[in-house]
Image (cartoon, rainbow, N blue to C red):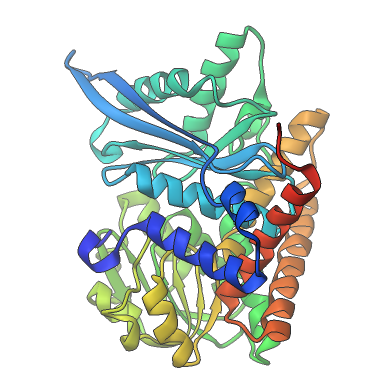
Length: 419
């Protein structure tokens, strides 16, 4: 993540995007006051026993932005730079994201300020269980359903489920999504976000009368989202010419061997040193001439200082908030077609919804059924955003925010305010 001075505050960005959508929708002030701010914000102290016996104090957060359309939903991230404002921003975006793909969830997010790369498996388990016990009053299958995010995974969700279930006295698999399959997880969940990015890229290429096959692609971030997106694009005949992660950036103008690169990453934990590519600087990837740029790392990767260097024709936001509002305006003036984050990366929460439904119904769907349902949801949402983009002559991000905010506002109008 870049410095605050360059990027600004993520929560300020979320509020700025909300205000723009609310203004375009001409929302009344009363409705804005109800849906703009988080419903609940919890900050917790997490004492963690390290392997050497020392107690290390960490801070954790859980923010429920909205439950107007259903239980709050959102991931938990472990990262050294997690802040309350970042978690509030991510929870806000989750609300609009769930509304854009029209699933009956509101938005939430959680995080712990820690460095998981320097923690053992035992330390991570103790951290997770203590954090779960601290947020226990807020979570539940009908209340708030966590999921994996940055540096958390299916194992993390298993620990949360076990801690919650043990406290309640019986197994409750629906308290989290993104679980291991044997504990009630859904087929297709691990690759869901990347697959959703791929489906929206397909839709965008169709709209722009371009072919995915033969398109050149650069992917910033080669974690779960970036690697799956790259793999699916590679399988569809696209030429992925550059990929980066936190360790480095690799480039091959003739196209990278994505399966081999994924294998290297699984063995070494990094893309740096891939023998069939040359190393380049991270800034070079963002400014690379290509058909499709996929920022799939952290927030604010493209900002006012580097937006003018972007030479991609399309940007598909695999990460949350990778482009600042100032950069948005620059890219819009350059004619770059944007698939905004709350649409583009909504595949993860969509399949989380499928997992939750399966848990609630005590039945499970086949992988192809999951993929088919996900494709229909993502491509329908893309058409809904594109329609608003065309009818109102507004940028794609504003169209997506208008769609999400408008659906939440309508739910508020129908429910009313108690008391």
